[in-house]
Image (cartoon, rainbow, N blue to C red; front, side):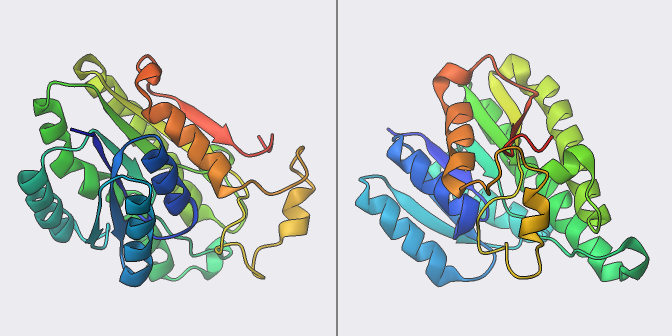
Length: 242
């Protein structure tokens, strides 16, 4: 039986690239979306075309009860996951003095509370498998350095890195690794006219945006059985930005 990996926020962008890449590596995939179910179902079809199994789960990672109910039901019906990629996240960028309470709360609830909401109902089933497992959290260069206009996002991603490092210590003897991948400026549909791409690229030694597939390659490596001795690490995929 093939191993299964859940990837949150995998209906497009980096999450989609990760899902398709891991399917190419022989994993069955649980595609996740908060909305845009049609996009998630299309990704699942692409995965099936690669010869792997796929199913779609829809829930908001900031909704603790929904995460618990849906993920518990799925693992009880289909078995515990081999791996989890926490990719779902969002931004609400602005200068700190102009933040609304919602700008702060929504980003922290999604990006940081989502770590607990998704992983808490999944960790014990992974432990009970008594097999190797993998958890990869999608952090950001913002969580490593802090970015202007992203106090909320930087806080959420720095907190995510800290949580992942702590969980890695707890799970190491269980043969479950926990790592982070921290992308820089990546060419996705999130990068639009509101992002000063040319200005940011001046600070990138590689002088270009990264591709979702380049981030996916880092995740694919960490999910591989050969990465069993790599845990509690942050792999930056940012063209030398920091």
